[in-house]
Image (cartoon, rainbow, N blue to C red):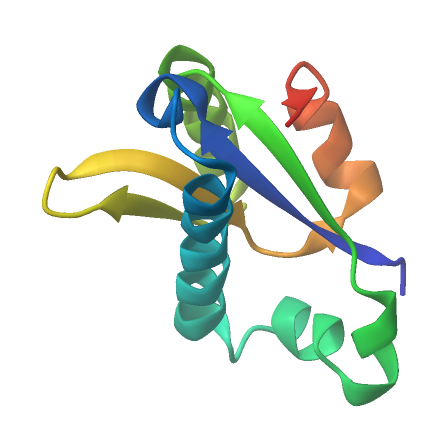
Length: 116
């Protein structure tokens, strides 16, 4: 099986001016929620297999809301799962975690986004 990668998107206009630790926490929340929701998926089972733990790959990207809305449509059309993290009590989307997947499938879909 191809190595899996998990992409995390930080919504830049909703986190602008935040301390780095707060931004990292948003990504962590999104990943944790995604894992909790999809823990029985083959992707997460493979990604978190004990023999693979030291090989985990995550890529953190920045996205505007406009970019995310377009990408979300593409991901949904292709059946690619993700979790949107909304900061409370403001109910503002701050981060999105994609289910771990093959980089050859996911990278072309998100290659227009910049590394954070």
